[in-house]
Image (cartoon, rainbow, N blue to C red; front, side, top):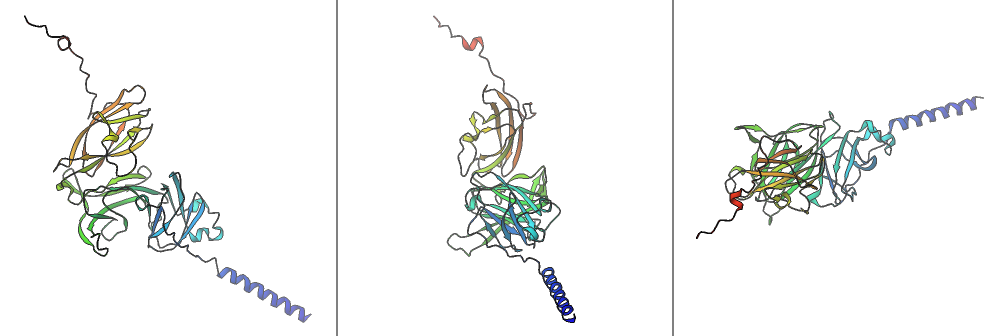
Length: 362
């Protein structure tokens, strides 16, 4: 009997010990290696161990490091995908079935189908947990300068969210909803010397109604896809071609074609890469930002006459005279109503005097 009690007691001790071992050794986090190339660059400034999912399918376990981390996510259609980040502790128990309500960050972004640096999206992951949703910041930095530019949030020592070379367009950066100031550092690098770096200067203010103001970036549900043009250093005094943007939103109820003067806007706008054919047509509720050149030297703003016409009846829906400023973007909403700044020019009917032939004199 004593022998039986001894073995029972010993077995219970072993069982209790094994339970303690399981309790005290949860699943360990093992980060994945980054891909050799990719269409998504992650910069993890959250100091958290994170797990990335695409449409609830596990993609990568991302280390708690701010080092650039490349990920390749196949996306042949270049359509918008849903990317979700979870804290490792929230999915460790069942990493293949995450609870959507526990998502740490969420970004809806149209990823490129290639791993080209020019089309690669960058996700800046902050440590702020106030908001789950992430906005898309589309950055363009036009040619005509030798300077590169780095973009910082909230000060010169804040987070660097992008680095652009002249000619880069629509560089997609994921940034948490929130309120930020933008700070642009301009620098030059000798292409024959990869270690060279010369700081050229900063732009941290913009002129608003004659006053120098901070460059604010406000991201929220109503501003979750923002396009910004980064100015050239000293752009007000720059020579040569500059570019001004106009965001056109079609609320007219029908597809429209947009003209600059008597030319389709696709024949006038700037496009570094891609095909401009039929770019002038904007679908119902469609939005597109065009960049128009200002070629006059010493001029930083220019007036354009824009016109929207229907596709079938070729009738003018709306016409506007608009002044565009270099390195800035303004919006034009096409809703079929007359704007104060523009009106349809009157059609001049030929007079009887103009149409009649002059009688020969004897």
